[in-house]
Image (tube, rainbow, N blue to C red; front, top):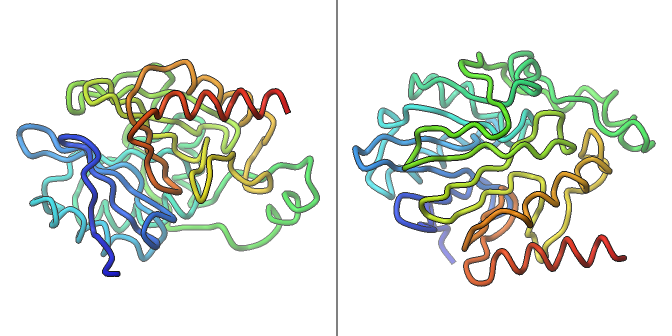
Length: 238
């Protein structure tokens, strides 16, 4: 089956697969004037697929006016420097992940786990550093398609955020939750603080939305909020 370069989730909300059909995703919010806010930039070689995804919906790099990173890991920020070069757009990231994006180095992994400590010591995990033009904060609403709310969900990284686009009732979880084969948390060793990730992910069950999209995995378009709440409730009771 041929890879689909872009999937429209709602009017003006587009998922762009950058690895596989949905293993890793970027997103584009297209405003009425044609301007684009890009969410996440995949790994270092992802920009070609992001550009192809934009072209599939009639947009091009020159339309991108802002790049938002959900967090400073190489599979989300690795292509950011290249996308900045192609678009000239400024990068926005939560204030606690901003130093890591600018250093081109992921935050430390969970020190409570042996594997997390080993991964922190490995030279892998770096990515081309990128200047941060805007430091985001919890509850901030960006002027994107009628309003894109920043929802702080730290734990996967110190400054990890999810995004709620209220006009289209679409939630993007970032890596707070995965939907690869099934709903689940990010793998423990990939988090800065896995327990904190579990705690803060529960805020996603309290928000209002009709569809939920993931930076890893396929979207849920029917009963999305109920599915997220059921998962969080089941895990909490386990």
